[in-house]
Image (cartoon, rainbow, N blue to C red; front, side):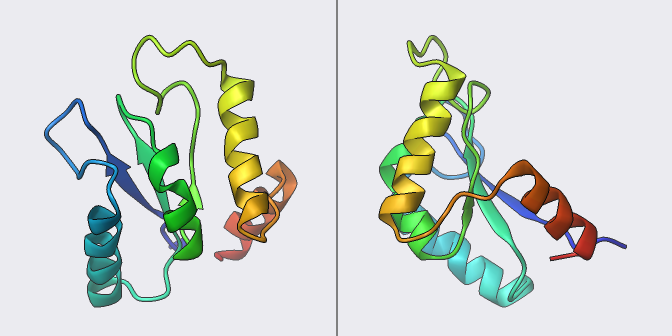
Length: 111
């Protein structure tokens, strides 16, 4: 069975998951350490802007998913703008965004 990638859902508009706050990332980190240490995790959202906690998530080693599906309904930002903003944050954290080929290879390897 392939190794799962856990998606940590954040939302301000729905009653599942947590709002995008640092304490929520801490709670998710504790849960990860308890039930699935060392597995890859990503933050994502629904009806929310995850960018305020993106830098904290990246520092914790989480992956970041952004795009129109994750953005607040009615956002005036385009998908390329959201992705560019995320890539900028990743680089500011001293990392390099993965290419599509790198993601596919990591998934195939079970990383």
